[in-house]
Length: 356
Image (tube, rainbow, N blue to C red; front, side, top):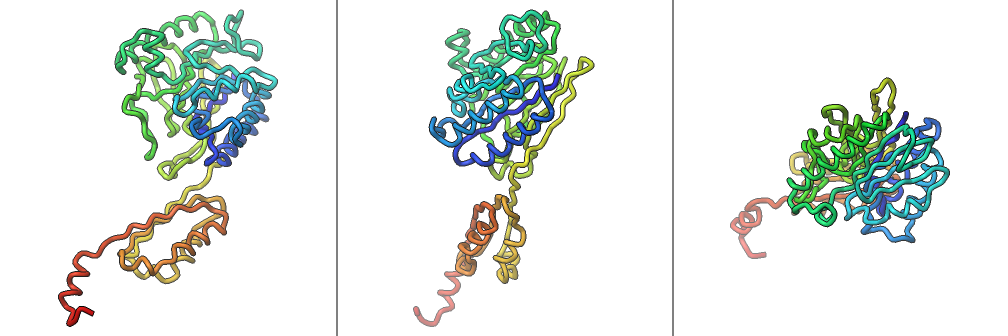
């Protein structure tokens, strides 16, 4: 049994090319690796920036169809502000195999190469847990709207699914879009103040030997009683807070009643931050543009950070630096930190012999 696990594609027009490149890389890997199923743990899109007629929407449909030509695909809806209702469209773009999209907690079964709700002898049990929202737990479960009560209700749901799965005599995966307590996050990823985090003890109640997770953009793994959990992280580097993080997907192999997991990196863009302190090292003024360009490679995303005295800003040619980087086929962001000289103006006035 081989599972390809990925999450947090975050397709939008701004990052279309990078998202397409990295998801396509995973699909090409699967074409020769022949997985039994794909597990997508949510946040396929940034739906608030994505119209139905955009290039990204068409690319999502094409890539998920290619995926489903290889193996069945199970998707959980991610954060409402990201996925919205967009993932439900994937049900209608399936190729040779089925794409199952879960918008509410449920359990599905892989049997004879397709997803079934009432199997005879399943090869795999998958518990699908979309991003927990307070509206769902209030309206459907009657839970008071505080995180602790919602977390306890989720534990009850996990336990129920775990009991059902244990009777199926098949490996059990939990596929969810949420954070675990103690998760590490990328430098620039922000989580809402009302974030609902699940404990490892609660996760153990599901009796899943493998938990595939989305939502946290930094790839990482956890251990809990009876199994291991994995945040696959995002497929590509979206900002400079992620510049030192590996991006990719997991391949989980089940044999000998044990899951063996491997992280596969995608060819996401290299992010370079070039720090220049012209206050401490004024000698760098000479040949500054050429020195910066020597560190840039095509397809890099470069952030140039320059510390400079405010009265010397005219001595650097920002336009030439940006133009040179773009001509090399790289993307550039510039940040100029203008430092004011203390008392310089006042001292000059005091020393002056005339107003002129």
